[in-house]
Structures are given as structure tokens and as C-alpha cells.
Length: 365
Ligand code: 13P
Ligand code: SF4
Image (cartoon, rainbow, N blue to C red; front, side, top):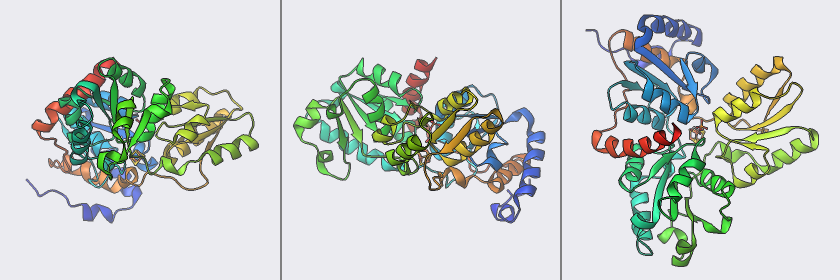
């Protein structure tokens, strides 16, 4: 068999040549291939996806996929999830291995174990605290949750997951996104004073024993670098300019942004809601630019105006790593019989992570 094709050759190709190669490879691979695309992918990649969705939908699609090769146009944790839920029985491929998630990197197993040990100086966490990890996290953190009676959540099921968690233990340790945890807890009626912030750079998270005892949710001090660019001032300006306009935001936004919004939900929820909007309506959308631009173009002929929340360009730079060159390189290699950039989670980690993911997927049914 010939050697695997090198990415360097593909980096020299223009987008049009890659487009033609991608289409040709898809025809040759047929049903052996499924390309999954997250809503934040750039257009030149997104248009090739066989299935698109938010994190929950994509994990369900991966779990149900019969394809031999799953090419994940998203970020690293999503490909890990696809490998875990398919039990390593598929070739799950991430076209560019540098497509990570800066929020996911804000928590790691060493820091979370340290947090768990420190909490155990105040109370028994395995009795009193359910660890809940946002799906935007490394596989070993999902495994930690699996091993400690915990669960995974996404932006579209966080409330149901917190209800599941509180039915088992009185407190939740929520990582890595403080905002999704706080926004969800608040909508469930948990006072802000009972949601404390665990600063992983400080001993005991910077909290007193009393603060830990009083807390319902211990929030990890992580955040999304894209959504932190949106501010209440952007919404106030919009409301002055378009008093009848509607504001819709992703729950990775800060508490104040979500409180000023009319609707809050996952990327799939945002698309569903705006697509159902009345002609003549005007929407301010607080999530990643590629999704918003596509939605703006889609809705324009239907008389619905879609506006990006920030005056700045807020793109997810790691989602943007997946370009037509990497996708073409990946697919041409598959055609030539080479699996490049396969994401494989070792079974010792995958098994407990699968437990935490399965608890989530069972609830979604
Ligand atoms: P959802 O698409 O699940 O809403 O998540 C957004 C996101 O940040 C993915 O990393
Ligand atoms: Fe991570 Fe934020 Fe990018 Fe989503 S948008 S992948 S949370 S950095």
C-alpha cells in the first residue's frame, strides 16, 4: 500500500480544489463515511457535513451511526465522545488535531481531584456532591464523573441533568463552565448566594468551609473565551435601537447577558427558535459568528433580520482550525486506505466516561 498522504501537499491547495476533492472522496466512500459538523464550523466545511447539530445531537448521532468512518468537524472533546459512545468500533477522525476547546482546557484531572480532596476536608463528597461535567471537557474528567456517581451535561439538557443530580445528592460540583452552571441553577430557583465559585488557582478554591457547607452548586471558574465577548451593554444598545427586537443567547454567556436576553439555549435551540420567527421580526444573537452569519443569510429571504451581538468578530478559533485542506486530506487518505488523526480513548478511561455519558443519553431518551 502507498504511504499516507501528507498534509503539507494539501495546505498548498486552494479551497475550490479541496471542495472538488472532498466531493469526489465522499462519492467514493459512500455510506462507509459520516461527516458530523458542529454549527460553529466555517461554511466551506459545514456544507460537507452529512449531519449537523449541537453537542447533544451530535453525540446521539455518533452513537447511532453505522458508518465505518466518522469524520468529526468540531473540536477534540466531541470526537472523544464519538469514540467513547461507539465503543472504539468506528474510526473517529478529527481533521486537525489542534482543534481543541480553551474552556475544556480550564479543568483537568489533577485539578479536579485536588478539588475533590479539598472538599473532603469539609464533607464527604461521594455522599453529598454529584460531579457534573459539561461535555466540553476531556475524557478523563467524564471518567471521573462516571467513577463518582456523576454525569455529563450539554447546553441543551443541563437543567434535567441538575435535577437528576440533586435527586441523588444535595450538592453539585459543576465544571468547567461556571456560566452554564450558574445560568441553569438560577433558572431552577437556586439563589446566587448558594452557587459559589471554585477558584482552582487557590487553596480550597478560595472558599471557607462554611461557604462549601452552604453551597448547592460549586462552580468551576472556567468560561468560554468566545462568549465572554458579549456584554449587557450590547443588548441595551440593541433594545434602544430596536425596541420590539428579540434577544437570544447561548447559556455559556455571562449571567448578566442571559438575564438581559429573551431566550437562552443551545445552538440547536437558537436555530430552531429563530427559524420559527415571524417575518418582520428582528433578532440579536449572542453566540459564535459562523452560526450567526449563516442564520442571517438563511433568514433574510424570509424577512427575518438576524444581527450578531458584538461589534467585534467573535469566532471560535479552534472550531475554525478545521479547514477544507484538512478535510480533503483526511478524506483522500481514507480513499487510499489510510486512517489519519484517529481519536482513540483508552478503554480504562473510556469505560467510566461511557457510564457518565450513558447516564446523560438515557435521560435524553
Ligand atoms: P452547543 O452546540 O451544544 O450548544 O455548544 C456550543 C459549544 O460551545 C460547543 O463547544
Ligand atoms: Fe470551546 Fe467556546 Fe469554542 Fe465552544 S465556542 S469550542 S466552548 S472555546
